Image 1 (cartoon, rainbow, N blue to C red):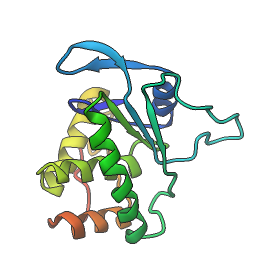
Image 2 (image 1 turned 120 degrees about the vertical axis):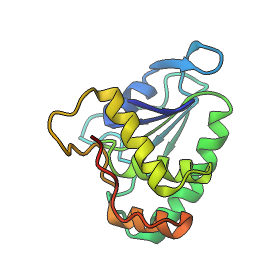
Image 3 (image 1 turned 45 degrees about the horizontal axis):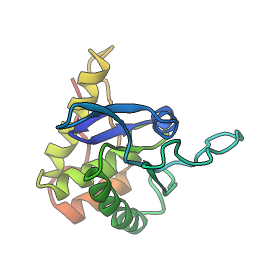
Image 4 (image 1 turned 180 degrees about the horizontal axis):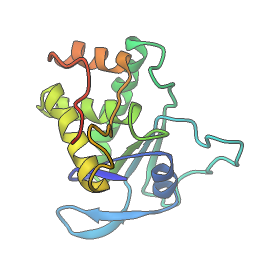
Length: 175
């Protein structure tokens, strides 16, 4: 689980499981530990044939499930997903921390978080660099030069370019 902004976290499947199970993070600016106010699952829960979670452990946690394939069914599907997810994230961040996760935390969730950052005023390139930097800092030094920590699908990047502008056709490489 990687903190991207105050009250906004990016994660993988295990992060989603932890948030739904009641994991707590520091809530800013209050400085107290609190369960997530919102969890966005962009991958099927569960990924295997395990019993699906019955729902969030805390009654104050809202869970939005929108499983899409990596790359999805194209730009239009991703834009429809953003039309649901971005207002949810904005609304739940007013109440606490929000986690956006997919299976690996590299494409679907990165693309949604980049869209949220762009809607908050960052350029697409700056949003992707901010996410890559936050992940790299949290994960520690890369194991080899050019180690990629984000890898949004081409369809998602094309949709983000169309919606928010910018010349970016590939995510930056975190160093």
